[in-house]
Image (cartoon, rainbow, N blue to C red; front, side):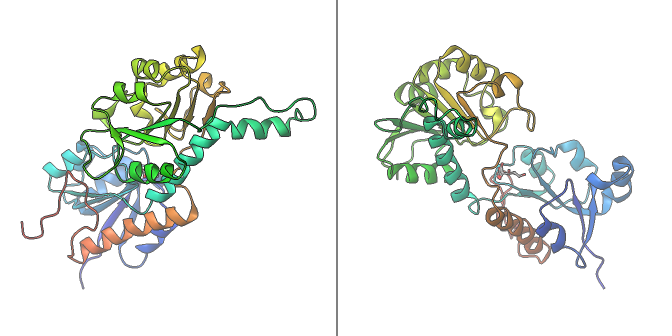
Length: 322
Ligand code: 8YV
């Protein structure tokens, strides 16, 4: 009989992933090893697939300790923690989980827009604190008559725009290229977009290329009625500049699902009442996390059955006859 495929899980995965390989493959868990270094040295040469997710980074140095690695299956559409270029150089395929989470994250983005503008969490806290009988909740900003800007009109950006259409707001966007097939207004700079809109939604990929794209100048351009929403990666926003802008009234408020150094949120940011802060829950429903887990499993299964990866990332395209 063929030797079982050895798979290394870099962290605790969704139960569906954990269960799927039981009895079929040999699973190793780095996060549970008493001595991770010793485990790597022992099993490194036998590992053929890696399952990863979240912020656990996978760099070339780790890949070099796994000389027979064929596949890195990432739980999540964003794979900025995986060095996909280094993987490509070594002939390793990287897969992610696109599409299955698009609507969930877009739903949450809209929730965050409304929660931030209308101060829904603040109003809830106000009621619970018993303030209502004494005075009505202070009036808030509004989505009425606003222009909304989207940074990154990819799958999720489009799903957000599609939802916004039904809210009757004007939609602008910025990204590396103009999209021929959308009715929204394109801006060739982020500053230009920030000047034009009241609400800026960040939904572009993370990684070194987009680091601190939303800086003090962009926030200044967004202006005193401006709202920043981030459902992408914390690295896209200069968090210190954002905290300063929120404190000084340079912008009106922010709704954030992601942070520079998760799960740590700076105390001065958390102390601000003009923010709505979520613990990275964009895709975090039972339904969608199960779909993501299934796609991780399906990529691994498809690969070892010789059918290629289902959802390889752009940096590691699959060429069956190469
Ligand atoms: C997950 C995400 O929270 O898909 C992504 O890029 O950020 C989220 O869906 C994360 O990857 C889970 O570890």
